[in-house]
Length: 269
Image (cartoon, helix red, strand yellow):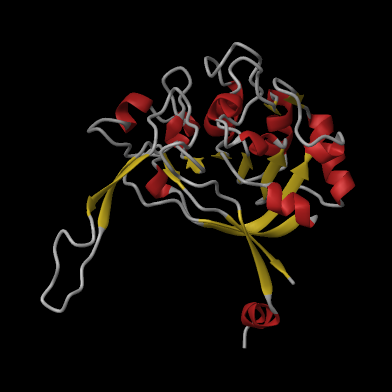
């Protein structure tokens, strides 16, 4: 029996790192909201044996709810990651390069950098810029090292506002998030992806909104690092988990710039 099967038999705990998708799910003003409608209800059509089925139609953007950004999501001066021409890549109405369908599933080591706990706060204040020093200190406090190939998740505590769309968007208050130097610190360590609880993986200052997103440019275009947003990290933090097996698989949307996901953190009991 393989070691993996032995671990599974010994028992594991799975943490769901996704937020629910519903009509009331907060969304960026740059992206369409999530909508679901029952197209057929039980009783609309009943089979001869008395059974019936229901189904729905879902309309959403690729960057609504818990989602991952493909490298095609952001360009800089007309180019995607690796100097790929954005104009050429998007011809035909879908991306022939760097689309989310080209992104492999992730089964790798994950680390939680709990910056809120580092500062003794339930949530960092709106507009707070998470620094390189914050990430290094959070890693030391947790006793983990950020390594090449990891997925690094940053907890600001902002997920507590998920149920209030206005507060979660934080246009008036600002939203905590990593600064460019913090993102560069992670990229220099070779992470394959990084995620957070907020709609935009950025420090958003009060009144600014999503007008300028330099961390997206740095990670997606310059360094080729995927971004995961609108995560639920409360369970991991409450359980004191800082190192885990991270599992994520984007939908294979051909030529898409992002995909809804349901990331998981798996730990041994």
